[in-house]
Length: 348
Image 1 (cartoon, rainbow, N blue to C red):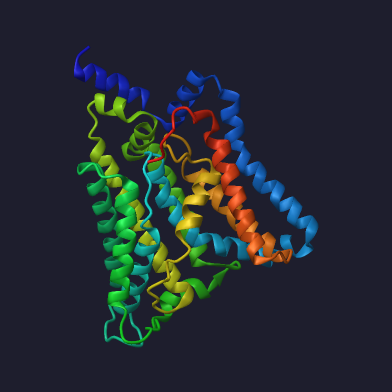
Image 2 (cartoon, rainbow, N blue to C red; image 1 turned 30 degrees about the vertical axis):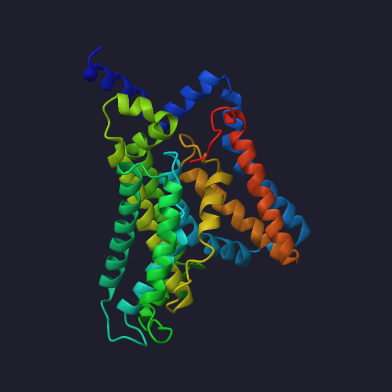
């Protein structure tokens, strides 16, 4: 078989992540189990809502449900970007540093109380481009220099945190652009623009994931990278693209955090990495790649945010909350990867 014929055959087999998933399930003989795993996070979310609703009536109030959606907006944006990396079997740990750098960079470029800069909407463009460039650099070092993505992005986490501290001016800058801060303050139907932005972004990401080569090939890389390379696909370019998307959306997460807190903070991204990765895993996106997706990760975000909100509503001890969150993640990872335990002896 010629290389062109091989490419056509393998590309048709990889045309849809759903078909790729179904093929894997048929080969392993776990079709029914695969369906159960896909529905599991949604069932868990519904069960969690019922449990917390029975424990505290305020949990299902309109105000509290709106609070859950508001809390889920920024983690959802970060998780969407992380999903594109995870489905390829890679990982990005630079999120907290990139978001912190994005926050402080935005706060000193837009109208603020410390510097004389006022780029307006241009500041958002500069920050998004910075996040995109950092993500592309991560992907380039990983794909072309053959460095483990875990090590590359862990180092970038520290580098970007250092840059955020370096850019921090003499005192904390307060953002004076009322239109920008209003993204988080002004409500429409009880929800801020951040929630609507997250929903719109999820829709676009889903289309990219299911209808473009970047999305489809990403699933194929996670399922069997060697086969994709054999088909003549430029795998490295798709890896760089996935990391670039992740960096850009993580930077957007830092921008949205700036709108929420209204000031520049070199540690603003602290706490974004855990919910970003954990939500993807809880929703069913495998750390080994090849299965999951944007919708899975969004369900995972809702599970994690609902769990936190419910524990607060019931008055649980804060330390107990962390322990429960940790147990939920361990159970979710074990459930989603148990059938692959022979294959995934080493996590990339």
